[in-house]
Picture 1 (tube, helix red, strand yellow):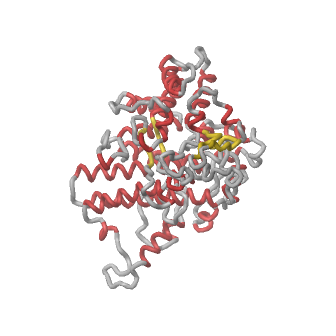
Picture 2 (tube, one colour):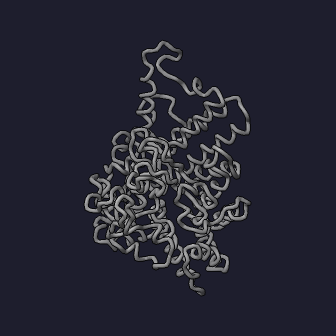
Picture 3 (cartoon, helix red, strand yellow):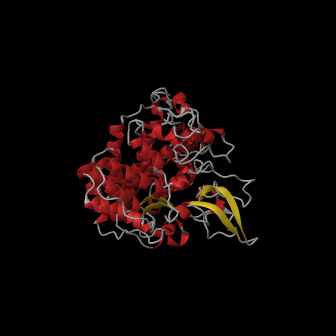
Length: 483
């Protein structure tokens, strides 16, 4: 069992060890989960694991996952502004099982799963509105499924924990890794249950998980497993399900506060400038822009300029994804930054602009452009590059103001075109490493070894190592091959 859950259980017990209560020294779940308000709070706590960290560290979807899926891919180099050697090691593919960012991702994901398990196990026992009760459990199952989907893609076989510990006995909590097929079976079960969620929400509930989000992530699960027919079924449920999803006319609107939770956003992790704490904000912008003095703050740059150069000058995504200059309203001048820097999550509504530590841009976990590109990929795998497959990818290209994909491509060439389009569309959105890894073979290794700074790239990098600290406290865990 993970250290983070063990510590949580021990601290929970120790917090009241001087009170004379029954049971002595422990507040049990049955004592807490009593009312509808308790249930709502429990699910809010599950959501919060996506955009906060109990220790005040960077959060899963505001920075830490990007270090594995972006910095660990061919989209970023070694983060020259970062003094953390473990962050730099991810950028050069020289990381080891003791890497603290790999460990942090593992712990954050399992902490979120722990909170989801508590909600799933205990909310059904509370007597309140049955419709709301079922909805809350399904929301928690979606998040549990999403977190396990990340885990199984990053680490392969993994401990499958579906109930929170009832004992503080550390040895009783040590469990083995379950085969990845078993983990996937649970992911699919959780997401299938979440497809019964509402289609939309209003008011303060906007941003919650919908049935459309469950179908979309389920489609990506099946696509990752190369179960093309099942993926196609889920994609049709999203496209033809009456959800009203569509691309924004302007690519910039995907990443603006004023257009949050819009027609393209299927599920986003919510951030806001009024939350008041660094660990409640999206930190992807401040890690790339925090000063108008490039000499003081070199930023986390992409892999030299090659990523920027993939874009045609008229591709509207380029200047939303990157910046090479920014206007400083205090001086009335443009500041030149040289090498392109990532720009998607810069919150332009903030004044002064340099105060990006309170960026309130949501993180789009899944958006409609992803559905369209999955549709193109799946149809190509089933029947080759059909007219419908072309139509799907060309919707994304049309929004970017680039011409339709060349007609008459072979199945292999069309597949390569889809993956290239995905790379340009989803920079810093947590897709690149997953896309390279799921292609199998040596795709990830071949992509990394093109860059001199990725000195440590090896075939074993298609899975991250199990954190050494987890193996040290749980002798039931085994390490991934090559580590």
